[in-house]
Image 1: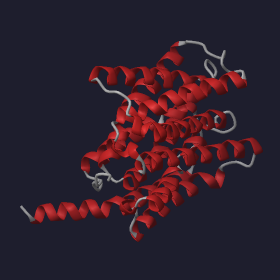
Image 2: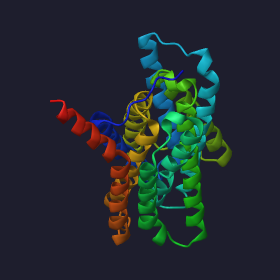
Image 3: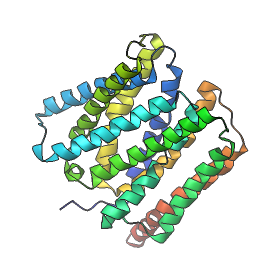
Image 4: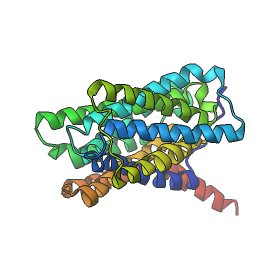
Length: 305
């Protein structure tokens, strides 16, 4: 029996905002260092580095891998690996801004999967409206001027598939024994699978030798391997063990906004009025999903004083 998850509170909301800012820079970092090191090799190296850090953390704690989570752990790891291979492939066809936007359709897939698998994760009608508003904001901000070139459309499609893989990973974590496993153990399965699959794809595609340890590569690998794949993912799984995942993932709609801002600042990608209007819809959607419960609890707390 899985322990009941709490609704979103201030701690979870604040931590999700920080995590979204870190995640929003990921695709931009991959693109920035692509000339020095192929994106698929960046993913392999960062996954390997983070796996070593997680393994060292578990060794220091005296933790061992549980046999009863091996099956779902391997499934989640494979889905995680597929997600990042699709990201690496997609970045070869579309912009970093497009990739981060289409990748973060993941909450839609997560909400649908969790609503089907877990009764405790079902959303109220107003929360579904919030998800619809947020997704409409992303669509309005980016789909209208996504470009009609076939290569760009292919990259965008790969981003959506990566989002579906990410959503499926979250569903596997929440709807299996991994839901009560230690976050480090859950993450280790994903990082090892991500490293192995990425290296295999790099060997197949001929990118395995496309590695240059320039200052840019080393800097982005530290960011991706230590800050994102190690620290932020541990925090994410910690949140998944304690809070309702369907509410948590709605905050990830903030990540495309961060991603586009970083894309404008670091890659000189264009910004137009669609983004401003879409951002307003995204923030409105997040408020509809989470604002009501948060305000209700605040009022209750004030009434008890």
